[in-house]
Image (cartoon, rainbow, N blue to C red; front, side, top):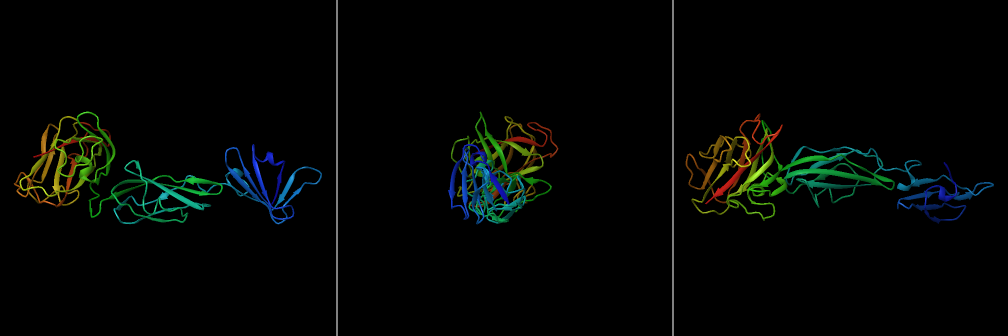
Length: 349
């Protein structure tokens, strides 16, 4: 290949030049533009020479690398741009899952991720490597909604992926995926007033009823008395399975939940069960159905001493608080096309 460089300044505007080598030997010209992009022009063993009868420099067998060279002559970033990521729709905490892609020309790839809408500083196998080799084995350490992105680069530029979403469930969770799916994330407003938390992980009880406003620290189960979280977008065909541990509460400590009229949503089914998404628990008192949002009580619970109307909880035991809209075709109150809000107050004594 022959490249004619007509007065170096005509290659790019406002350039700084560094030339290594001498005529008659391989030469590398390093061009830096005013936009801080670079182009390296490397000749073959014949180096540079002046064109006959003129001032043009001629380089034979030249190769071009760097973003400042443009897309021609061997330059240009990886392709395609954008490119797709292939990832599973769901995964478990601590269990590796594969993410793959197809890109040509990349020498490195850097991953980024969000968890429940917030930037995630570290995700094992994804943000801690720059290898361009597909696939990667990724492991999430906490449940929630992960959105993964990848930028692949070479000396001439970069290409960005389309996002891929992976729902990660808690360790040991075995949650039904039909006829409804488990909800994992929503904005929550703590009533009364406006106390909004964004991108809350709905798989853990503490994240929902462990707060009473947008800036307090978490209070583990049984949580702050009177907390009234309003889940802003719960799918009509979804359920909440919020995992909690009953802790070292004394015998006869009790509490209950209320489907309140302020921030009202549709009628609810609620259960407390050792099983995720269980709306048919065998223990008496642990299930209520079709409870309207008119300040009506939902599940009542008490440590150890339950009844046919009060759910017995054992101390230091894992449970799920399971919630769903009674009618998956409901139209209100508080509903849009596919989602509704619901406000459930937590009280105890």
